[in-house]
Length: 189
Image 1 (tube, rainbow, N blue to C red):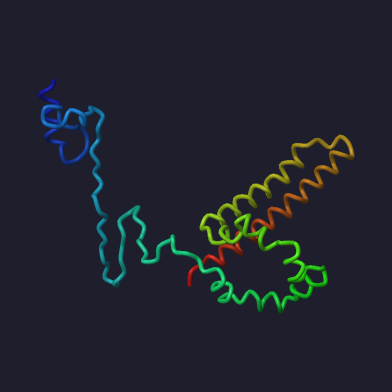
Image 2 (image 1 turned 180 degrees about the vertical axis):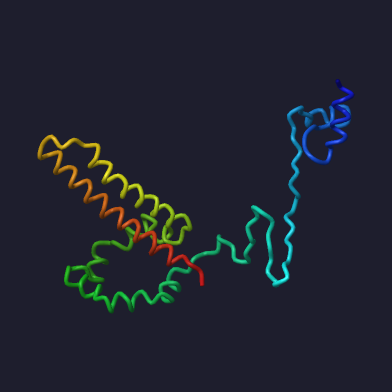
């Protein structure tokens, strides 16, 4: 039996299954369940006739731009012309009519609170759009699920259904919009 195993190991030594017995390898690395990989150590890229690179099945192209590149938030806001769009939409005057001016923001300490809560670092974090999208998806599913599961036996339960559904729809919509907004801010151009 051992002779057959050695023969099988020598036939399959470059492909897949068996490892050598402990006499030819270090005894601490021998395992009867050790499976050698058939994958090539480095993926090989093949150039097609149209001067485009073709990658092997399962390989992703490696781009020169890394995903860890920092997002320049103010530069990106300038590129998107967000302040001009806010001005044209009348958001600044509407905020001022509602009592929210720069002096009010300063008095309330909203900028320092935003800094403490990490709002700016969240806006530059690559996982933020995905997290906001997941949150919005959960909220948009939670509203109808709550309405379905809570019985409608009295007025209080119906009112609770309406309040929870409204909060979930508004929160889910805001999360979706926030996800889209932060994703657009983080796009590198």
